[in-house]
Amino acid sequence: MTLTAPAANNAANVIFMITGADKACALKSVLEGPHEPDQLPAQMIQPANGNISWLVDEAAGSMLSKRILK
Image 1 (cartoon, rainbow, N blue to C red):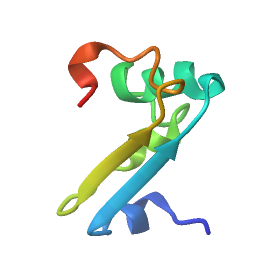
Image 2: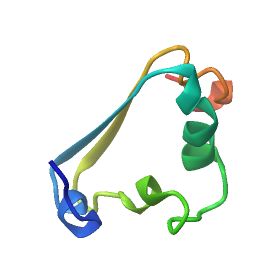
Image 3: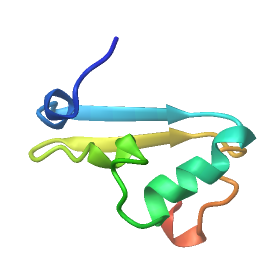
Image 4: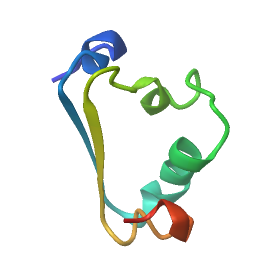
């Protein structure tokens, strides 16, 4: 299924599921890098009245700062 950013931003809950070490650099860029939504479309998803959750396995999250991990 594909949704546009405006549709996703109107959702009550948005969940990203990220797995694998090959996604670690991109995930770090999306969550901790500069705001570049043209290069990183996931940065466009910011629900105005909803929640966003990131389900990340250890390998994908291996490059994230400790402050961002919960």
